Image (tube, rainbow, N blue to C red; front, side, top):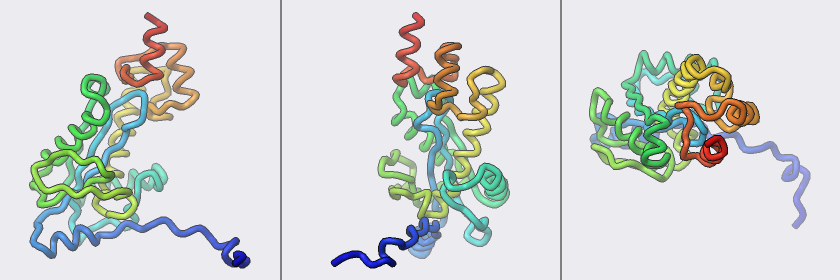
Length: 219
């Protein structure tokens, strides 16, 4: 059966809106605190990976929480400040050196563990973005695409992203010429060109292939 005009020209489906359903269900079944956990910075060639754990106050959830990647920088910053003011938050990092020592996966899981451990209240459940969860001090539930469907994880994604961007802005001051304040350590043409010209700095992940190759060429 041929597609009709309406089928061919149908508008794309709207992006999912994060909900508080999973948290509300856990709270209804006796949980006192539910945390969302996410990270920022697994892929860059430089800088830390940053994890955040967030326990939202169900009576004061900021409007507009969403996957951090779907938000403009100014809106992310506004929501970050609202979350700092009204939620329980813990932020943890794994440095470039730690990433090189134990690999990016293990460093990410370690940062998540530290973030959850740093919360002022131990959660009864941690909702973790993705399907690769750390062992925590509480039960863990993986949520694939969680930053787009779960409000607590969306909040954690914003906190992690804004925190990491600010770390990269500080690294740009101490390691000038790489453009960290612009590309945040990702492998953009600007970054690769600066890396080729200046060589790796202490903020670079030397276990990542582009940096490792250049380091060998310069040795």
